Image (cartoon, rainbow, N blue to C red; front, side):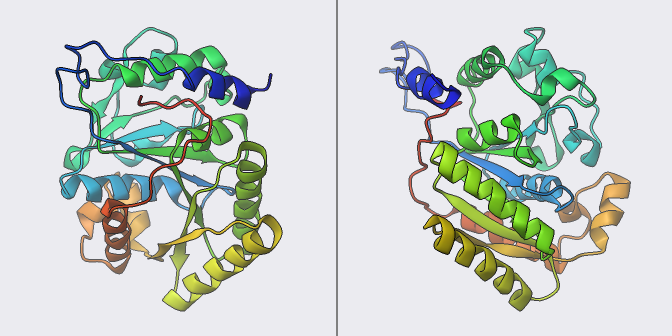
Amino acid sequence: MDQAAMLRQITGQKTTAPDDAPGGKRGARQNKISVISITSGKGGVGKTNITANLAYLLAGMKKKTLILDADCGLANIDLILGLTPKYNLYHVLKGERTLREAIVNGPGGIKILASSSGIQEMSSLTMEQKLTLQDEFNSLQTRPDFMLIDTSAGISDNVLYFNMVAGETIVVATPEPTSLTDAYALIKILYQRHAKKRFSLLVNMVKTPNEAKEVFLRLAQATNHFLNLAIEELGYISYDENLQRGVRQQKLLTELYPDSPSVKCLRAVAERLCRPRPEQESNGAISFFN
């Protein structure tokens, strides 16, 4: 039995909450959580900054938002936000700390579960670690409206796993040909090998709206023609020199330059994510939230 089949078998057995537990018969049903992976085939396309800024904007829209840094082994979301968490995902998976103890507060009221950096064993999570993570998330009493999963780039086991976990996947690409090629490769593997069907494209670092449209059409035509798969056009982010200034100051672009063109683009994406959207698909993977 392969890993995907094992995950389907595990998640096919839902547990029933006790009557007095949150979400049980005596309590109100938990709100549905939007679990969204933000991923890329190629590194350096800006997905971590996009994740952090989208989380900040969603929190500003009164949405409880949690970032899971899933770039296990080479994490940097805490560095971008100027945070120094005492504990992180590594401590949770080792059983040394609970998820609640590892989650820290970030700017604008967002919550962050940082990951480890420079720990090789985190580069490919075991089944036991994945189950531990599931149990920890299901034990949270206060759950977010949005959980944004910042994956690493490429097609490693961890990247595929966290994209399978998410109900929706945002693929970040730039106008560079190599970025598009790698984005297509990631989509192809997730679709053909893991039956992932819902993808949105977010084009970053564009100079004009027309350039973003061209990038989307090129990728959409490829997925339609070769995979018979339609992808969604989520939007674009304008190239912004202020981004690097924010990175150096360990401050978010949305905090420092709220009226910049790129922040307006990000705000449009955040607003779109808040609109009623199709039901999240079940990908046969571990669901963090039953």
